[in-house]
Length: 130
Image 1 (cartoon, rainbow, N blue to C red):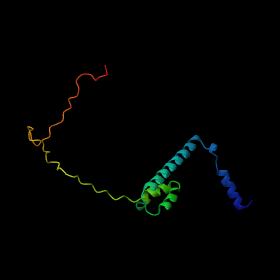
Image 2 (tube, rainbow, N blue to C red):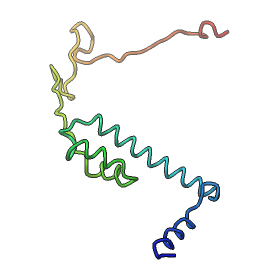
Image 3 (cartoon, one colour):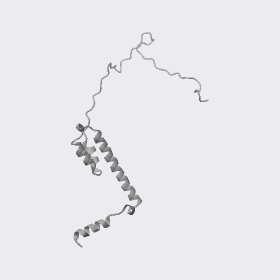
Image 4 (cartoon, rainbow, N blue to C red):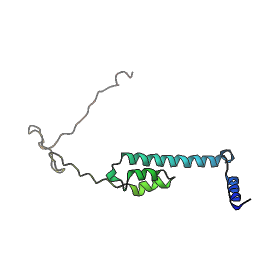
């Protein structure tokens, strides 16, 4: 037997079938696979929705890189995305300073102050709950 055949026969001997794994090992494989798929799906969704101007490099290249187990999606989230520019706040049409009281009609006893709203509601039991 040649050296190459010995290596391949040893490699085949080390491979285990799904049924050879313990329930704990099977669960670990399923959890790792689920995490990998969730990372990749999230990264591909973000890449598809993100404008090309907010991606570092070509989107097609990142789509391929994301397919690399665990490393690809993490690399995309760490280095493949650019931050969107901060939105500037839109000024109000008539800004009212917080310290200035809101003027009200002069016929009210305390002009310049807004009276509190009081909800008196209905007295007695609620209808239909007898």
